[in-house]
Image (cartoon, rainbow, N blue to C red):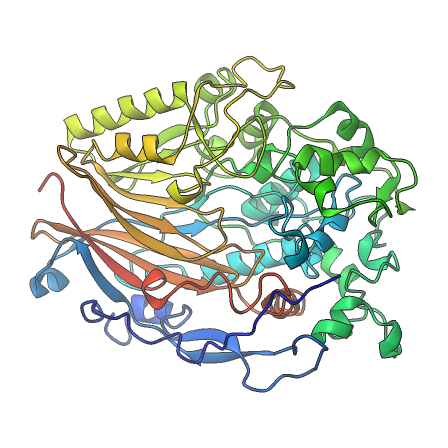
Length: 571
């Protein structure tokens, strides 16, 4: 087992200004509500690696997280210039929160394939299941709650001081398409005061962890191995210096009161919400295993890298005799949910707005997970980029693409500014599967033919109303300008935000301004989650993850706190 992919890269220079960009945008005056909010964001403080490790491993050391200087907004003018007068003349159009890739995980699920994680290292090349297991994933629900607590503490835009109007969750809200994961996610977003119940991340036996981190398999971090001789330590301890955290698993899975978003929140469909482990259509055998008592925890002796080149084949390992396994408590809540059931669960959710973007007439009856809503003074168009035939990458069906073109024609004709939202951005709309999912039984489940990024981008750039496309999936902060060529008149900012489940666990505040000088400004501000005894430990574990640690996901300074200038298409 070779786990030497991770190379530690310090973040000491992370706050340096990007070369060739205009100066920092204006800040709120001290004492205003926006200034108080800014102090709770990365404008005031960022997080990074300590200069001194706390533990040593054979391959890399384990570094605590420390506070680093904040990062100002960096003005980016690739799509428009702007006058200094805009700073005192602008009008806020919409202010909201972008949450993505929260990955609420049932860590005791019988259909998860954590054992494939050991093949996601250099010797196997590109595995279809990278990060199939994370040492910190039992804390996923508490991470979501810690993020929402911080968002509620911020409360207003750090730029204008205007109250945050809404939140948008752009997919991979769950990890393995399971009903109990979906219920946990809904309870987290709505909060205990609205749902009337505590969040319960636990499945199976109450108050007892039954998962791979108690299996004895040394490929997983076992947080309760106090005083274990180093020669017998698990690979995380031996190779990467991971610590003891006795009792952390049970504490992470204990029921708790959730604060909720405290505002209207909208949803979006991601590949982990609609495919088994985010990669494969649900085979009939998976549905049987989901409610069973056998959890596969290790790899069979005959398994090789080639055994896992196809997601369905890798999941098929669950059904082979002789697989290393443990007995767990059965739970019918682990059953997979279809797209239609996923939509229906949001319509039955007690939070606001009703349906969280979906309607019974349009979405449930037609089995389609895309919609358009007006939020503030901007039209939001939310897309479904999940490819039902499998693989993690996205694509857009033919009917949906035609629907999108019609909505953008309407916006152009009526002078409406549009922001697109989806799980996959253009850089990950490259799914190789163009055939239907043969297992879909629901009417309208398949939408063929499928279209990938180049076709979709070309169509969108024909429409000047689009000013931004906000997305996730790649678990990294990245902002790119997109502009048309030739007869295409469109241009927009492509805004990708990091995940909750991987480093750095951040959300993004976004506010759109009309500068009243022929330009718009889109401010983006990163937010780290609040501290507590569970989420803070999880954050440090993910920062030291051997596959995705300090050296991944953060992006450059110009991908984080920014002022994105763009010409107003209807000025």
